[in-house]
Image (cartoon, rainbow, N blue to C red; front, side, top):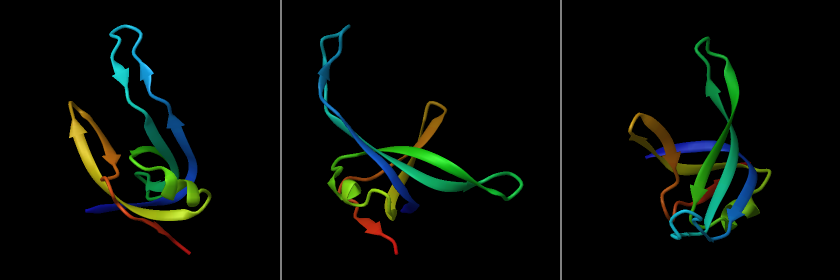
Length: 95
């Protein structure tokens, strides 16, 4: 399992809504914005803002503004890739 370390910048919840075209109900979702660092080609670390969906935003709201470590999965689908936080993953607040 991979881990992601970053500072929790924002926790945003989006209410459930109905798709205007299909009438399908789009469920509520929660997104956490993390500020982390990623290496550039020349070895310099660049700031990286990462948006990750979460099932339960409460642990992240409690850690807002703090550096945390969380387990993530890397996925690839149709040429796109990203990270997801597995359901029930603990949020470790770092000193």
